[in-house]
Image (cartoon, rainbow, N blue to C red):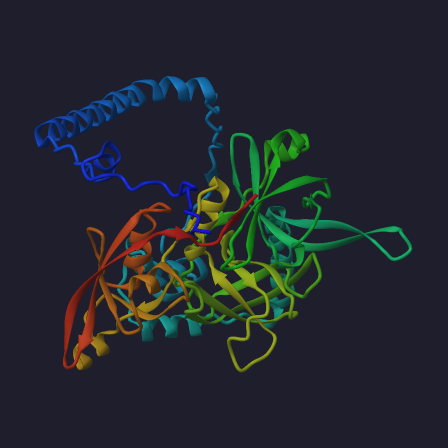
Length: 465
């Protein structure tokens, strides 16, 4: 048999011939459309102009509608009614000659004829002469009893300005019973307002109370309100509504007369309030020393030391014998080698704080603890006159600005500073949040160079209720 030929057709597709339709599709190349740079630039420019136009229109619309929307959304709050506060301030600085006139017999020292034409206050006296005159103030023994009777009558009169603040607080013990506690502090009527009577007191024993009551010298008792606490001294300001006072107190509230810090060593004083730790106690003595404290920033409080022995928690006020308050007793003041002596803040330096607390105004704070430049330091060491920086409080505006120990402040804003009192006075012209420019002299090698610092004034830490 012959070979049989395979007559089955192959299932494989035939290859396309060159030049066929399929091959032309596969080999076709896609070309990018050329970019029209002119059209792209025109669209970009138009978009940018429209964006700017939209921003301008939006800004003008917001600017025009903002006042209307603000009035519509929020109602304006009524302006607070400020109480007009009035102080009795007789604190003009007293000269030693004026003290002599108050306490001494002029004829005994000048003679009858001279005394008729000349006042002791008009005669210039040296410190030695003043001390010699004071040394002649001798009381006879027969006057001793009459003297103390006279002082007791005087103390009773001054006590009309002294009140007792009682702090009342309540707590629940472990049995669920509510128990009340009360602490007391002596207060002083320092000012009157249109609506309120203002009372200054030591806040230390009154802290964390729920309510406060005040008892006046005639034993009339009513509620009072805490207004402010000075963080530096711990003094507090309380107020009583005139509507809550008795008729006699409302007619004559016995506002204390604030004198001046100046007091010659040996000036007699009476301590009223709680100098012995008990409300209503009393102490007689004299000013035995005075010094400027450097404990608190932005102030130069004068501390008056007496020869009156008091309690460790002594409180109250020092009166001279001309009816003026010259100091606020400071508790726990270990300022001398003699334990137990009563010290007091001089009233002159406290007046601005008292007025600020009564008016609800914060005391300005930069945090500079300073002192005066003495004439010896100026002449021998070349230290320029100004407010000498002893230190700055931690994180205070002064420290953050770069002021440091040894700098001498010679200008605050536009005010020239020649001593630390100038600095304190100039500081009170600023408000919280103000930018304060201080020009200081800093010693660099052998000479002082001028530097300028800018600080932001803060509140002294006075707490307002």
